[in-house]
Length: 108
Image 1 (cartoon, helix red, strand yellow):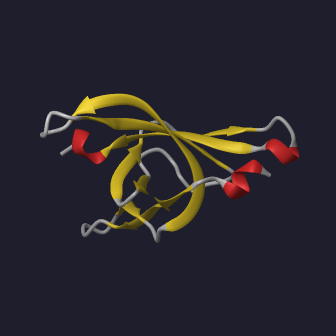
Image 2 (cartoon, one colour; image 1 turned 180 degrees about the horizontal axis):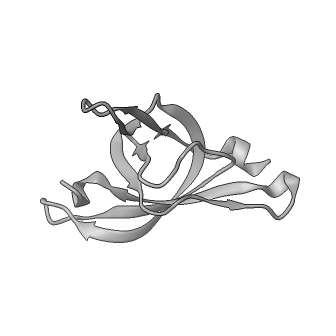
């Protein structure tokens, strides 16, 4: 399948529940999972140097443990899923997941 040979390895940090320090639970980053993906730039933003660089990407993957607000590292840079990833099922052989991620610099 084409997604087995996707050109980019990304790290997906699943959202897990952990202690919040007050006796309850809160979402936390889980152990990163390497995933092969096609990474498509969607929008450009301006960085401090004045150069344009992508701040939003669409990822196409065979499968991924991502949920809304999961961290995804692309080339060492943190991004976060902004919508729940979508599962596309045309057939068993062409099933894939798509996710839209934004750069962490938008939130810091």
